[in-house]
Length: 305
Image 1 (tube, rainbow, N blue to C red):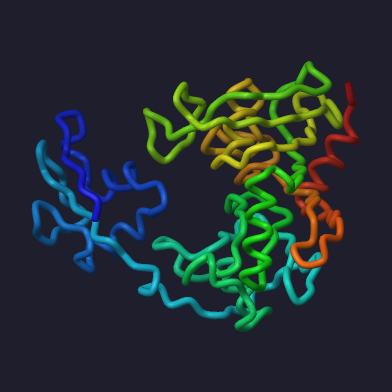
Image 2 (image 1 turned 180 degrees about the vertical axis):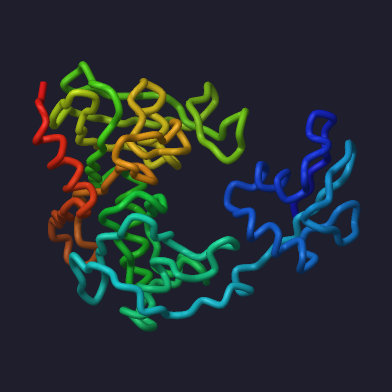
């Protein structure tokens, strides 16, 4: 159970809005449902989402166990890039959440994978994350590995931990990047100003991002990016911090763009790793999504620098 005591500068807010600022993983809708179900208490009693909090109010969030989310197979179209008895690698579309959570009980990549693999998934990830070795943000498209058994899961997790999995991303950023290539080495942690966001903070965890310019346009730059570490929102935070936010990223920029893209133009294009069973070198590539191709084509048709 989590507890929060309302401070003087927080009073007057609706309780659902207050909690959404504290709990990054919960959507406003999920919070309202938890309040209705009595899983969020105010001063030890049930409350309403519209209640406006007062100083020293005690807000309690009950533990919601994974088993309370009914995990079911769903026929959601997925592009399979590679599959055998041990792993499945998919090209995750933009907008698809990786695994169920309180705000997204179904309609996720895990639900789709269960439909494809049936019972053949590693159980290490727990009831709501079977086979999930690593993740991509909801609006980041591209390659993602899922383990079909525990041996594969353990091996791949070790490879990721030891930086043996090479991940290559493509991003379209606002602004013209001057350096042809560079490394960003800035620690990342939870933002002290907004708990829903990550930020470059002095006492954060080490985060290293390498990038090089693929092409410069009039107001944009297309980048190829490799990461040594896998911090939450790492690429998005780092690029925003140095003044080149990813096009469409509403969290780490104002999100405004001439292409009306919603969500960051970030694509996990390439994965290089050793097969967890055979040790074979794997080198998999996923092409850009169609909307990404269309925008790049439009920029290519303009005058390049």
